[in-house]
Amino acid sequence: MLNILYISYDGVLEPLGQSQVLSYLEGLSNERHIHLISFEKPEDRNNKILFDQIDARIVNANIKWHPLTYHKKPTLIATLWDISKATILSFWLVLRYRLRIVHARSYVPSIVALLLKKIMKVKYIFDMRGFWADERVDGDIWPRDSYLYHISKKLEKYFLLNADVVISLTHKAVSEMSKFSYLRERTPDFKVITTCTDLDLFKPKYNLKYNEKKIKPFIVGYVGSVGVWYLFEEALAYYKLIKEAVPNAQLHIINKGGHNYINKCLEEADISKESVLLEARNHLGVVDAMQSMDLGLFIIKPLYSKMSSMPTKLGEFLGCGVPCVCNSGIGDMADIVNNEKVGIVLNSLEKKEKKESILHLLKLIKDSRTKDLCRKAALKYFSLEDGINSYKNIYHSLDVKP
Image (cartoon, rainbow, N blue to C red; front, side, top):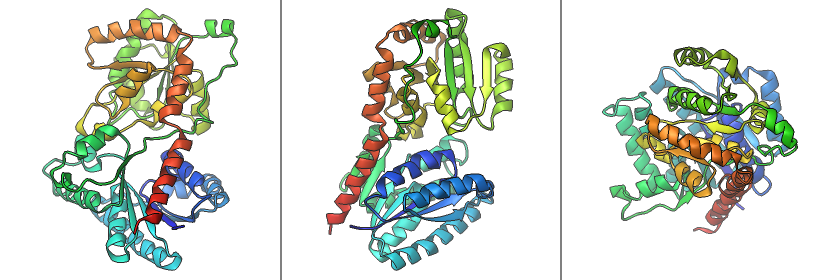
């Protein structure tokens, strides 16, 4: 049994790290000795209650945690500094504990993992999480002709060519990478493991009586970010069309850090504050709120890099039995929603298509089978248990490879 070094540039003190890193590792640690290197933001490390809570989870799972501090600015120098610290620590851990598999989550940790593979001959898993360099361009962080983009794409080539296993979030991304000229003669061992959800936590509430359900307002849920990748104004426009068809429709927005922008957009869209609940909630609070929603709404910019993405909230909404309105061009999302009949996929943002889609949407929501269809789709595509088993199979496959 080979021991694992897992490197994540996302902190496990953050909600994303807890759901998409720690939750997996807790399920994997019963078969492996796992050492975790993560980069934690200073404000999270200084939150003693949060730190002690997560540390207790990690200790209980018998994971060895090596938290490093994340540095943000100046970007290049800060990132190189973080890489250098992770490299020194990683080489020491591999030597000290004879770790033989390095699992690198995304691109920055893969620089360290590639060095370990070349020098220490460890097995290397490139858990790519998406087209990171292209995301930086699509998000207007880097110009496409910048040296950072070209260096990152060159590194991406080395990662793909040298990884023992490449994990993608979507089948669409695998199909795209298979067309890369440098992979035509040397296809990596691709595996698809999407963003999984703890479906023991994100589950429907079936305990409402029918008459209680009838009198409750129709709740449209918007959960998460409103910037960079999201077309929040388009989501508000869609809500307004829903409200024309369902006058008692309420908009429940759960967001952290974007309330000023949200209030500005609500005002510009002429949406009454009386029909909107805007709040921030912790992880359990999000679960409770989602269980009371009738519809999940999110519209994402359909950019090139997004073919490799899968929004975590899709699995969470479906797990709670809530159908979704989303748009095409985002990873495998449209295929799942359409094939499983668990929502509406917008192929354009034209007002005519939106209005027509609402008629289908209301029929879907009134169908008593929809909640169960959503739950079944979540179990089929987004089960955390299935994700953990997929990682276990990958680890086992590397045990026996020469």
